[in-house]
Image (tube, rainbow, N blue to C red; front, side, top):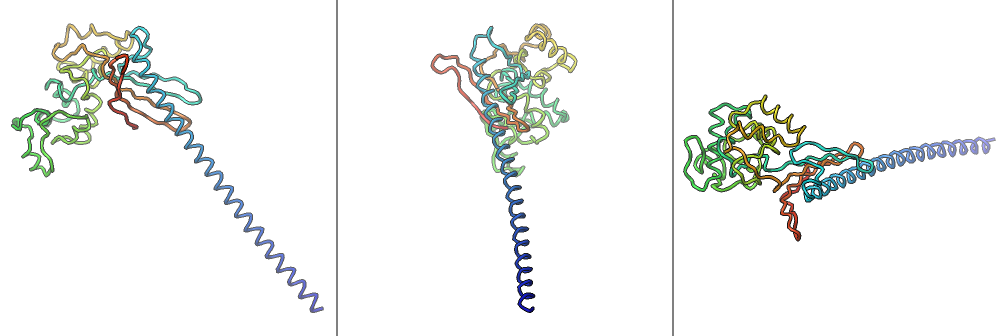
Length: 293
């Protein structure tokens, strides 16, 4: 009798152990399955991100190919308008912006820079001070303008550097100028370049922000011009008779900024390439800058 009870007890214990083992194995299997699902999702997301980046790169090279074509054969204008198209199982968005349509930090007339700073929302005294600090940064001497900034002013402001007394190497360098802050920079950056090397801008390809910086221009005139340009592709005649030619430049198609966005699923990659066009048979173009934003 005792032997039978002992045997039943052992069988019961064995059953409990087996049930616990089955429960543990079930938990392990569920955890492994969940882990595999997570890894599958992550791999899929990484693949789509890589595909989006490849599409963005393809957009850049397609844009360069178009820029090198004869003007009559070109599909895309370089005035900043957006072009979108499907590419395999994703999409590409392109914007081509001629740098001749931006205000050159190194060569632009002071009046253009002044107008741009005024449009950034700061008051007149601050605009003049910042303008003169920019001029002091880019000129070759160490003589401060009335409201400008040279080496001593930077030291008094606690900076460990002084005025450069030389050209800007990039628009980003403008952040170092005394008086510049993030909000002003965000407002003026879309209108600026260091690649046009012109005192004025070409209205055929100019950005809205750059056009508004021209003395005497207002929102109504600019919007009318942009609407006409969007429909005709040029509309240069709207500027030739009413605007001071000192602020305009005929130069174009030398340096183009290409912004290409590749989209695959929920993933997007934006690449920005600045391209110098030489159209030399052996070396038709060169990349001046390339970054992922």
